[in-house]
Length: 187
Image (tube, rainbow, N blue to C red; front, side, top):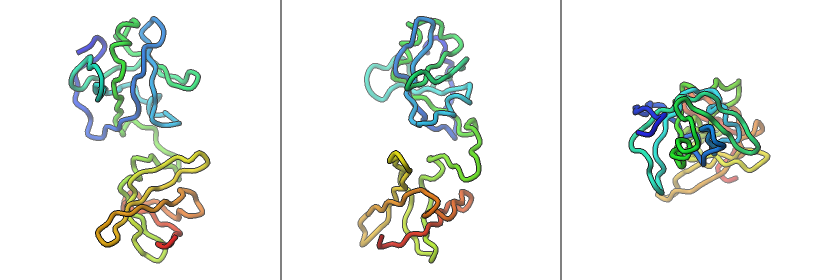
């Protein structure tokens, strides 16, 4: 295991939130490429779990836990420092590592705010009770987010897209795992 990384188990609720891009400066800081435009989970959690890069040189094996001292926004990215990562060489050894954070460490969303990961897999039903499919992924189109929904027609998987905006989304119920929409199957 690398200096600064403790061997660990990946939490059952771990979510991949970014990766380490490079060393930053000479005092052990590193640059992070977050997967979210609003990387609050990176700022709120003091324990990051790392897995080696899927490609390229692997500088460590298994799961490592990093104790974060500080994470902050810098220009168009995030930079962070960790206990026991004291110099550029140690930070550089983390390059490419995938960052996971326990979902239980995420900040609590406000009313009518949802983490994308919570919406994936939810059933989508319209006001008439017709099933429209299941959320496969979400896309950010700039001004809005779009639900990408898979549904079956004659054994073939098809896709429909519904803007994730209040005019079309009536309710999101994470308990019953359903999204109620004002949308018709032929749109």
